[in-house]
Length: 435
Image (cartoon, rainbow, N blue to C red):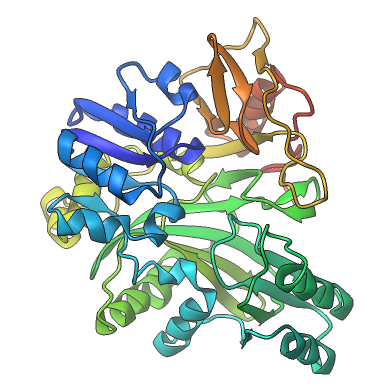
């Protein structure tokens, strides 16, 4: 099979690595890709097309005729790449633009959750800054969460410990261009306390298979301090799960959401990523994403034993239930190991503290740097100048390590990270540490 992957970051590098191991794949293309994945995956091709250039992507796909396309970033999904490919009889894994509103609009997702009976935090919706500020002043709660309604690369959520912080967050989002431009639609949510878990299901519009769980570290600095980022590291599987929790998620989150979306005439196909919190009142859904998470993918996929191509194809053609029956498995087999992934980010990342993200710094490795079969280096924001890697984005690269022991996986990942260098490199030192 010829496989096309859309995207350029660490997530897409991890997808490309996983699919490159499949005996069913003879040709692998990533658009636009990055020089790091090309250098580390022999035979991989890249094509420099923006993930939101629908015309360019379609033209390329019609000329290459991939057997299957897998969408990495939410930006592609939000502009309707799945709709366009499907209209041109190209098999593609991902939700339509309408179904993708589960991520592109937090207010839309909230309405569906309430209608489907999926447990979630109470919320209020605002399109007017003064109305939002008045709501905060009158609220009986001191803590709350302010969320931009649309896409914000993981940076549109502000967890507020006081009303003053909440008012500042509303002002920053709606009139001070915190995200580069002013937001005209946000929600203010009930503050929940507990342990966060990311859970991933591969769906075909009606049925789904479970890909696993992970715990992401969103804040920039150790101890969950500093601004929100797209993710500074992750460990998997989640450690707070008890017997019955996975079945609960399948029964009370994924099944009702798929049923509700189908009834709305927006059947959901592709990856449904639930961000959940285990509170003293039980599990509640914080939000949904409609694609593989970044950096969760960099640890989830190395932990999956099975070839994912048949599962991805089953998602694209609406035959997950049929594939489950044929292979005698409800879910892809996962290794009985622990994984830890640590992100190295550029100086100034995430760019929300009044400092610009540095670009163009040379990346170097100690002479002793070697990856074992249980270690993985995934490139994200990198460029190559005369075979020398340089920083090109906020999150530059990441290391994943697997081991029977969570602590050994963590030690291995940090040992590898300590051997990689570039100016002002930022990484957390507590990813996967025991609480």
